[in-house]
Length: 114
Image 1 (cartoon, rainbow, N blue to C red):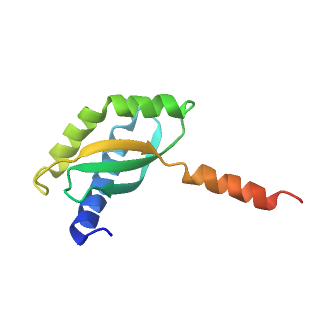
Image 2 (image 1 turned 60 degrees about the vertical axis):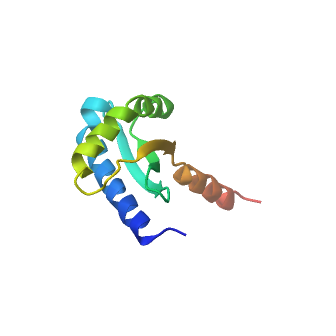
């Protein structure tokens, strides 16, 4: 179960990372539309799993790999934004959130005639 502190830091990270991806979409991420869907943070607040939904791009995997290559730069920008609010800027681990694709697949199965 997540503590109150963990949930507050996770919400802060989600908000700030979403703003960071929005503000730097054209310059760093080739104009791709990136949404931060979920942030899960460890109990010691040193690492965060960030789930991203990537749209408006031809190659999702290429953009995701580019995001992973920019991980240290993203962490630095995040540190500039929230450095006064948290003691430790967590290590970021990015994952593709495929829940929308999964829901589409399940919906298609339900709508398929028997």
